[in-house]
Length: 271
Image 1 (cartoon, rainbow, N blue to C red):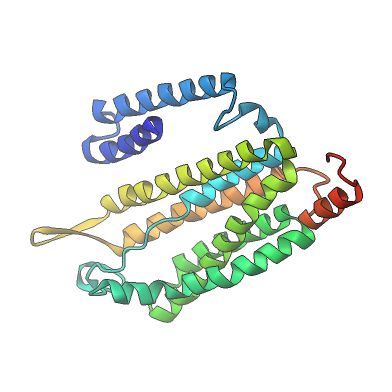
Image 2 (image 1 turned 180 degrees about the vertical axis):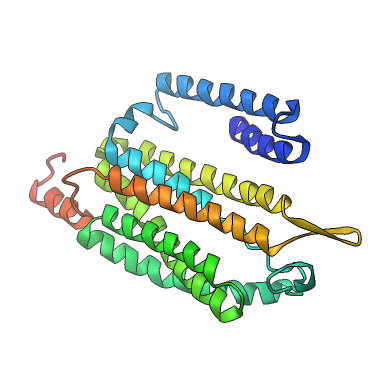
């Protein structure tokens, strides 16, 4: 926890004090020391949170790498910057913001169920790859179409569908890939990587937006260019995650239904 905190803190300090300042270098060096120490301790722990040897499994490695990048792509949306200051919509209260974000929530609700059913039929890695492709398409749509409510709603639907498919398939990827006696550790690792990515994304987006501001009286406001740059970074991370999901996919992985059937056919024999 301290290592991750110091890493995020260093990003904030780097933006404020400069990327060559001691305020940036000291926290990130200490962060690396703590994270390396964490790995060394986990290698000796009887009940580790992260078991490094599991990364030899391509499925688990791929699931964790993709989970990290899925988390990073969860960038915040800032919709309340006044339009006269370069903002997109200049919404006045959080209720309006919630309405603008509603299409994302609806798409997530619908596609979570679809992704879960499809993962059982075809295998979770196929759903994960599809989700990363849709997520990438969502950022492309967001970069091109973000001038009106309908354009933003379309982009939000695509993003919500992609995130839902990724989220619902990640845990199934772990189920399909790891030995049954390692499932607890493997699922915990996947959650950890997703949370780490989800912590990095907002800080990274804020750092990008902080370089694209305009002064209005006593306020410093973000500009549209800042949003576009942040979404461009989101697209880059989504594409990296898509590549990881394709190239780190293990060969011969079966679906969850296949695993259940095999378990039943084995009449109690350990898979």
